[in-house]
Image (cartoon, rainbow, N blue to C red; front, side, top):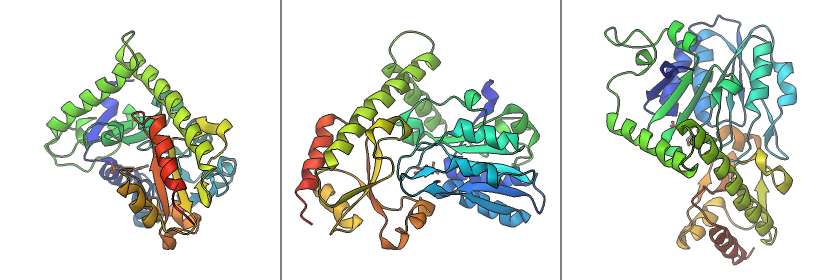
Length: 330
Ligand SMILES: Cc1ncc(COP(=O)(O)O)c(C=O)c1O
């Protein structure tokens, strides 16, 4: 609602360590917090460490290994009057599942808990409206939406004002300056504006920048669903290939076009290397989503191959990827 609700930082991980330290000063021994198994470790470890420092109990919200979506129906059982915070991902950077963060926030608020959302993976794939979600905090990283390496924090103004920031004495006493430790990367901030202008341009010429951005992210989401459907239908022809996460083409709005896969007869590293030789860049391993890989029993087995599409990819590229996978015997 006001510009002071946005603070910039080094990256999402640093912002979250800093916020977890500040937020946890309000906790008492015996309080509880909730983290999820679907999150990147940047939205888990800072909270585990803060909880340890403050004698706070950590509860885990699980995901369904069948479709890799959060089991939000179990969230009410984890919440109680002692719960202070829910740290939750907007979308998984490993398996692409999108969480119903508005519903999770409502449930957490009913129990009196704050909500801290990691939208790093979701941000390049769809519109975000922090007011509609009503979360206390949301973080993202500009390099994931085609800009420079800078983190962005949204926080409700009253909280950013009332919480104690770890800062040097001469630094600003008010939000957002009190959260922006040291000298900002001004050259990156210029790039942040450019990245947002670039995205807004996808949304056409009419309306405010916010409206164009909203439109751009809706267009992006619709286009990426076309790529996802092409991929999911295509891979059914690749024998031995398994997609983890949502595979139902009727549920594409519940996932980003990021797919974690395994191919029988090959390690994830071998698949990634082969695709790399063909000029197709994917990732293998756990991509810091270690709780996801642990839950799937794959952490010690080399994780999975992650194939991620963005709005600049084409249907032809999806087809070429599938054609290469089909040449790999198993
Ligand atoms: C879902 C998610 N959260 C957090 C991070 C960490 O972001 P940063 O590199 O800005 O610390 C990443 C980075 O890949 C991510 O994918």
